[in-house]
Image (cartoon, rainbow, N blue to C red):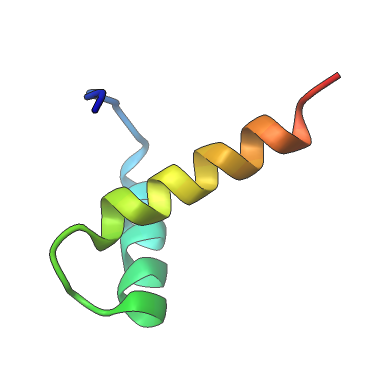
Length: 48
């Protein structure tokens, strides 16, 4: 399993966390799971 350290704008991070908590709750691992989903969608949408 890979590990990434990223820097986000504070407002984007707050919005993302709020949306994850709203949709998935505050369970451990939900942010990582949502980030994996977002990255997967981005990759699929940006394939040439």
